Image (cartoon, rainbow, N blue to C red; front, side, top):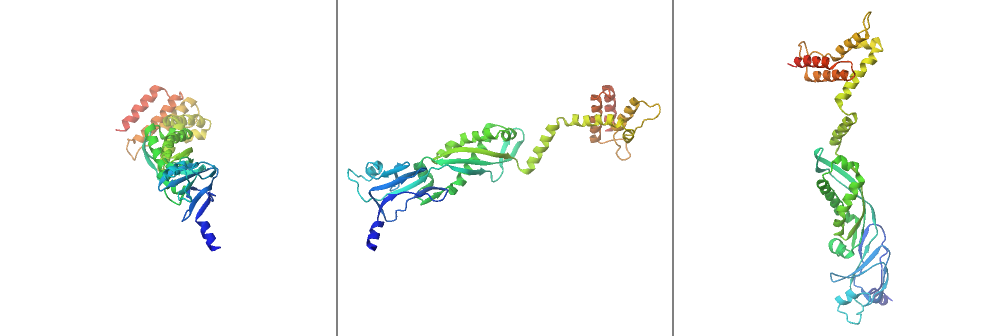
Length: 336
């Protein structure tokens, strides 16, 4: 009985891969000291490819299906083995199985910010991340460039190479496109499509097809993001000077509705005092810069702030342009 078991182990009549688990891209059939006999059965399941390798040379490749191994089904191996008409049995050959299933939800991203030249912000450091999917389509290329004679080659072993390739491609894409960070961040779908177009040839060099690529986020490091947020806030307000003027001009009519409010501005409604006089006093109070110490000069910031307030009153029709020019000249003299 032991002798029969020993004899059976020397010959292989069924070759197949159950593909247990997830993430294996290439698997070598365990030959040990065994040999393949004439007429052996080869089963290649859906989403698999099988390949015979003779002494380091790629021979026949089989797509999904069931095959009986003969000189007709192994033409390349027959040639390499110098078989004429007779199939030498048994024979030795390495048999590799490859998974062609789509590898979904593969993550890519910048482990550290990458430095790029942006036409709006100058030199900035940027982060980006997303997902992609691919599948193996050329087992010969994958074997020769990636998996080699390994017994097993997994998706995780390839992940770092693909991720770094994507990040490098993204950096080049930014440099070549000349598109600003703001425009790129606002058009992530188009950015992903452009990246995919650029990266497909690089994946093909490994025997892979890039099926999809999604950009989920494009951002700046926290300190740069704060600067960007400030810029966005200023753009939302518009002209900050005009906004300040608008606020000052609107405060006077509101204060006029309440005597206490006008008093807080340094004026009041007395007998015989018209509203025009009140407004004039309010203007004076609102636009009078505070003195610095005991001197008569004021700081440049105070002058600028006062001029902004005055300009707002001009736009509201409360102050004439001539009055504004006169007051402006007075304030500028105080800087000296």
